[in-house]
Amino acid sequence: QKEVEQNSGPLSVPEGAIASLNCTYSDRGSQSFFWYRQYSGKSPELIMFIYSNGDKEDGRFTAQLNKASQYVSLLIRDSQPSDSATYLCAVNLSGNTGKLIFGQGTTLQVKP
Amino acid sequence: GAGVSQSPSNKVTEKGKDVELRCDPISGHTALYWYRQSLGQGLEFLIYFQGNSAPDKSGLPSDRFSAERTGGSVSTLTIQRTQQEDSAVYLCASSSRSGGDTQYFGPGTRLTVL
Image (cartoon, rainbow over all chains, first blue to last red; front, side, top):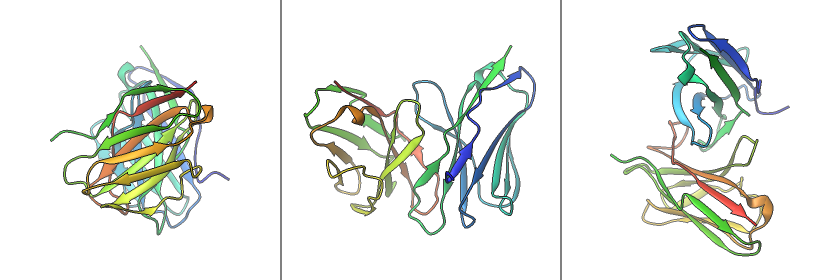
């Protein structure tokens, strides 16, 4: 079992719809969770981080964390074509130095 | 201030040559990380620095890989006797402290080994 798992997609949604991106992780003691966006040929760009169970909202983005289910998700409301990118889930495992373990990423396509 | 910078942006080398990749973190960031992203692969952790020391080198794939950091700032990743499988984008990230703080990535160095 991989430490961080994501569906590679592509996930295709129409413009204006809600995109839901999901991630599961294996280490129950993990404390910090991050969503990065990566455009083709570019480096990862931080979208959101979440540490506590529940929802965290920032503009059109909402991160959701459920530690009991070892599940973290990212919702993108009113999706735009410019949101088309690969979304990387990253987890800071328990008791470590801060290195991030990344999922393989989910490719999102927002169609006009 | 400026973000994380890396140089060179692209490096093409021949198999067997040594290469050095440089990372300049965000000013004041004490933690520095190197990752590697191969074509179609996820990001793979290589090494972590806190100040000038490297408490976690667990991701270095072989003894051909080494890294150092001087003055608590700039870091250099060295790959000796490069192999074709070393071809990847090497990404550097920094954070204001270790232990789960947000990491900000540089633009990366694309290494191609012919």
